[in-house]
Image (tube, rainbow, N blue to C red; front, top):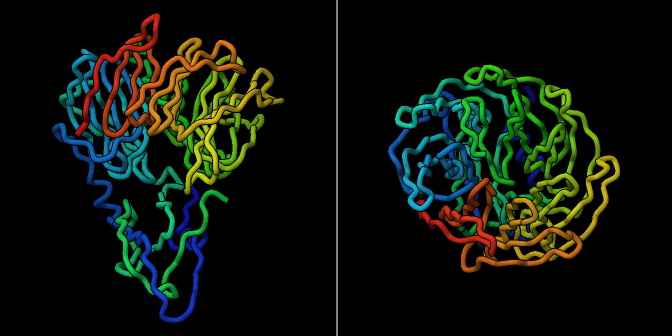
Length: 408
């Protein structure tokens, strides 16, 4: 596998700024939180339900809903009665952000490792496998304005960075290192997979797990569900953020565009084409004819304006932009027949009729909520936002709220 020392990577993404002697400035200081590798790999715990710190990605499998507590672990929720979800357990997995399930086996990233759990008995969840050092580009560096990295307190040797502590401090400018711009379904068989949202970086297709990091498609053969095998990863570019599957195609969302790969030979994805756009945070979903891409502006995303881009993918070798719609602060999105759901951040959940993609009709907006990602399922819509799980029932007139479940 390819590895980069933390120090070398830091010096690729930061530059030394020197100003007049004695000048101070209030800055955001990012201090790394370290663990030894041995302690890190012994840190997994199956715990009773607990309050969430920061809700991340959402996943649905049979009667379970899983919610990532960003970099902390996975909350397991019994959703047999969507009007009354019940927390079951918390799986502590340090530095976890993504998950996938097949046949009652849960796959979770933990920095550079892939961890596998048997969840066939949710009262007795068991770690069954750990593949070490399989994600080469695992280090997650914070991005914000006036950011300073402080590595002065501890040696890195034999340790890894598992998180960051952010504080505001007054620093002598000539002694600070500043960050550079990062922006330059419900099936029940034992062999079934679950369903993730549009922000997912893990995707199971048949007997293979595809996991994207910022540069690669990491590929695992999961023919033996409890003993995945690492295959050769495929380099795909920079700033890869999300993955979506349709038939023999993988659609990768990146900060620079959408990349399409053919997986008719599953172990060796082959690049087909790309659709480039201005630098922005970028999940993508598709139907038979179009790709729907939300572009989010912001400090770490690069763009100045947010939008929904609709791209004709009828000929994947000749991609064409059909229409662009302004958005406020979009994150995830989902499709259900002719309905398009867009999580527009603090502007709420927006519901569109996409029968005519060149003239989308806004059917409804669920305001006064922060919408992060959605999973359109057969009989209901799941949405996560601001530490709350929302569930809606489809009706002829739109959506009816089934439950609003606080994860705190």
